[in-house]
Image (cartoon, rainbow, N blue to C red; front, side, top):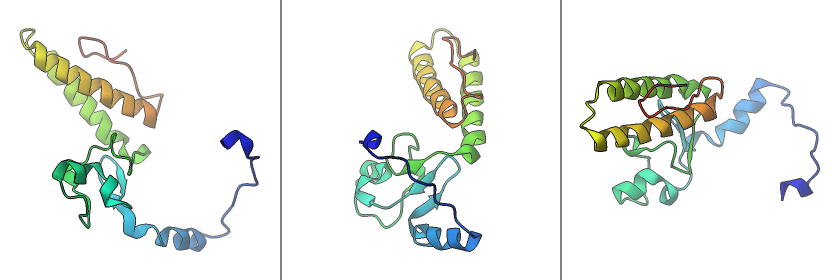
Amino acid sequence: MLKDHAPGTPAVLDSDQRLVSLLRGQARYLHVGTANLCWYRDPSKALCNKLAGTPAAPEPKGMLCDAERCPQSTIHDVNLPVWSDKAATMTGMLKALPRSQRAERLRLQSELNRTLKIINTIDPRVGRTATKDGTKK
């Protein structure tokens, strides 16, 4: 367990070149997307490959990426605008949706809640909880 290990002295890199050298070994695994960074180290664990039925594909399938659910995906501050735009779009769609469209309203609300959860994880100051009518509080 982590509590069993005393914290050590943080490693401080003495130059940018040292950082570049450390990252060079990982570069072949990194695939930059608009909503996330994909660290495609093990194709058999990639959610996109599971969905496509191609467990040994040489590259990830960006169009099938589910950034929140894939174990090889990471979401960062730089991705916040994409997630914020998605939340704003879904909020607008919920407001425009007629009351008679209950199934679609539930689906959109669920997706909006998931998106707001991701936003809150990226930056808690930005994330808000969604109410049933799609507004934020």
